[in-house]
Length: 132
Image (cartoon, rainbow, N blue to C red; front, side, top):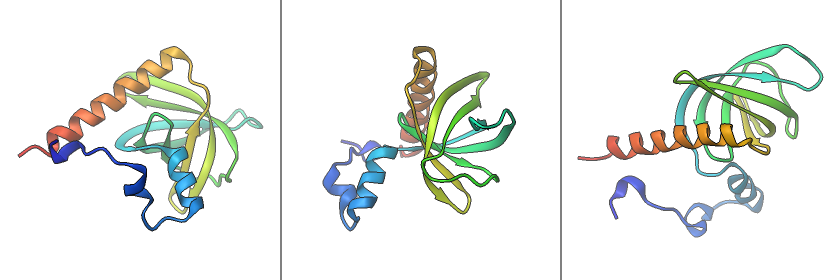
């Protein structure tokens, strides 16, 4: 198998991780570099908070965001890329100084298709960039 797309096993990525880190990695899933604008809407407010997606997976994403969010906080996220958008409920699974990791809630079929297309494109671009 070419080294561009090596599958990883639980044993590979779990080496040296605590149980809490392994559980977090299972929640967030395999992520790909991805650049897109986003908006966050909190249940208690109608204001749209601007954000930037830097990583994307079938399960969630990483958002660079200036607003302070907390772990387990629920919200709605809308991501804009290539004249399409994706929208989902989400929950903050971790907080970093530069942003937050989200796990998506139940995905509606039209948005699932958009997400799949974006990830397949990212996977293809990653494979092409690693070819000699």
